[in-house]
Image 1 (cartoon, rainbow, N blue to C red):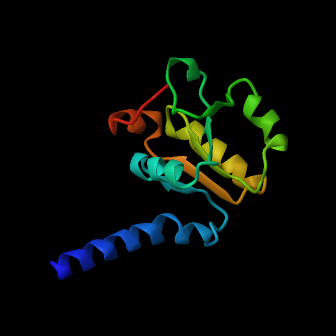
Image 2 (tube, rainbow, N blue to C red):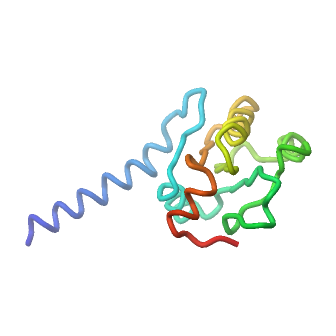
Length: 132
């Protein structure tokens, strides 16, 4: 029984390291891709995480708490100057090309902690997480 508890504690610590401690390391010049489960955990761990939906279909469904800064009409580019570089950001879209472009723009603008939902909004839905 003690061995099982020890293994469980070790697994929790490793998960904590991966999601939190590793976050304090340098992201280098890139953003970090996260899957839907990792994104869900980031939202729980960092309640001030800024979630940005860069799609034009926000009203059809989105991650709760996200804001819509549509790439197609320039809203995203206009908003960059008003976003705090101290915050953490999770960006997503309905396809890779646009979400990659948004994450890359955030990094190029000097934002340090940028995550991109790998698999995009559909991966969130497929994982069974709540949508708004």
